[in-house]
Image 1 (cartoon, rainbow, N blue to C red):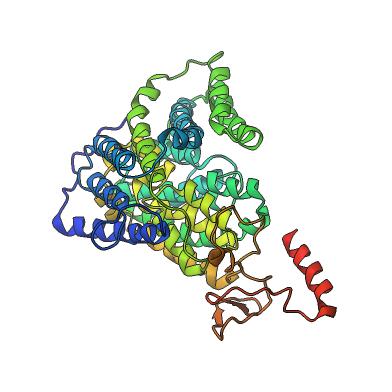
Image 2: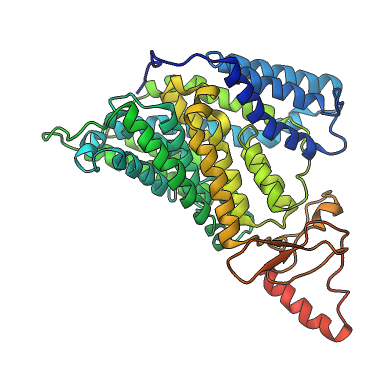
Length: 496
């Protein structure tokens, strides 16, 4: 499935360029702050040169949206050359650590392109206008369906299926704002499910309880209502949904089996082998035994997939060794950073550091990337099918409701559920600064004070107090001798 660029695409203006620069500025200073000491040579202003080069690459992607692959590839070559020539960067060692992630992502993007074509040829999308409500509610129901699908299948697959359905419902005249909402719905649906998103699965495998992530459903639901309603009304005004549908269509049940088999084997391979792409391609090869496989979709998705790999690998070259001290403010900033920086290494750094409210962190890292089309794998996969959406300015302008939805969802989750940072679920990572591990919060519901700095954070439950700054303290040894046994038992219970 391939859609030509819209003829009525809006040209980029100077004001829109300034808006994109401002949005990128939300993420890059946070990354520079996280770089810490030893980040390499710094440009004027104290920002590491590697970040300046990466920022120029992202700006080039935003401005030269018809040459995104070439810009990303140039940025990769320049940043890699700088790291090799002017730092002690070990490229073979770095490749040995990153190849698995890159190969897995590459396999998922190409495999789910085939999935989307299989789903189109089931003929189900042509029947949906008979089942969905008319007008803008039909568009919102579609986004809600993508949201639900992403809770039990990969968010890339959910976004691809949603894009295929939208092409049929709206005669292929899908507004970029609605595409942004599809990507955001897929990311929001996966943010609270340990099966729906790579980052939430990473948290679960690393030892974070699934119930600690489940609370993110509050933020995801608020975000869906916000951007879902706006995008559905926006799309209905742009191109109304085609009513009814042919009555003589027969569903291809063989292809339905393939569509169900691909995400099922992806989940199994993810849980058993930590390599979901292997399950995707196993299902595709099984399906090839009884249905023709649309291999042409691989060629069409190849360039966009390589673009994302170039950005992800360039982001992995950034000298980010740690994240800012844990607080809800830093979590919100990490969500903004994930729009321009790969969220998988961000998740790994957060897990190594520990002490986060994992529901809030999962929501921010999972949903923040929806704000820019290349900020999430779901967005890139959609743009492989809708090339005209590879325009950062148009994505932000038409998809303004996604940024609003992320912000409202984050603060709704914070206000309704409170800030509940968990004790580290494992021993601190080797080499992690003690100043960061010291900020791991005490057990929830236990008010503690450091140097008189005590902050009350919003909660609808009994008020939770959490120290956000101050020197480290040994809470156990500050207990009276007769209280230490009880404190130790309580800490063990919290760890479990």
